Image (cartoon, rainbow, N blue to C red; front, side, top):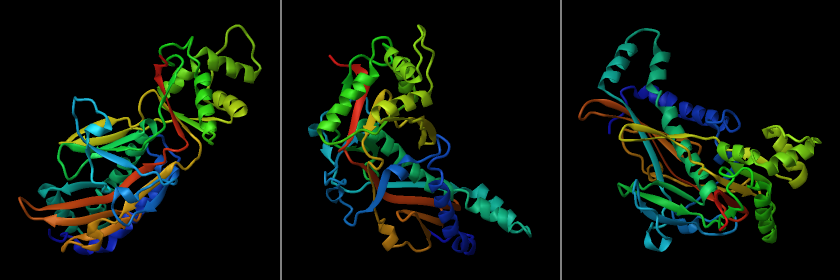
Length: 363
């Protein structure tokens, strides 16, 4: 690796750009649906010095288990005993973007035009937000997948074609009296949720929030039981109950049960071999009941390169755990690279979280 062709600009601006990106991303917590990061508000950032899974525990000292699985396999996941064990290492997240020879030529032209320094800086650092945001997006994907299923999957950088599946050892997922989507007339979401609440209370917890996707929420408010509950709360006793709104449902459930509803509408774009795919991390039809606003930790460790920098590379640290870097390569042609890496994983505390599968009726 060689230093950037614009080393002076990189040295003067890279850390500032990285810090600005983190400030902007941390400020999107409660904004637009697809730009917010729930893992920033629902997890506490925790440092692990050993890089080992054995040292990563949730707030109740329950160790997190991991499996290695085949990625993109048509074979369903088997029981945990049939999968190879991952060595307990904290997984590494990494991302790279580059400016090719033609783009480098364009930068050279701009650099020779007087008064265009700001444009040159803008183009030179255009990939910095993307590689840092990429780590945030992966954290968010794993967190929402874990919170809705009890499992999270990510690519194993040491084994091409394999992935690491983290098992958070959640409580057994509850089924429902009748499927919410398929049978709105006979489904009883409030009865299903109250039954899970009773289970939580027996273990010493009280559910304060139910999280679900939009389709599941729409199915819930289409049921007769929920319509009648909201109508009673509004003092409406007509023969035909009108459609109910999100705020009406929330107000009615808060008054009677102390619950709030949160709709999770989050997409994450992943890329493999140049093909981008829009993915939904929250599992369809799954409802998560949580008993506390903080549900675990964002556990991180120092990247090896933080302590052993590579010659010719300029580094910047973002949000403590993301190591961003800029450098140049000369073969097969000249190119400018921006990269990020992080040793990080969302660790969801299984205690106090209860899942409901609204697509599966009790046998």
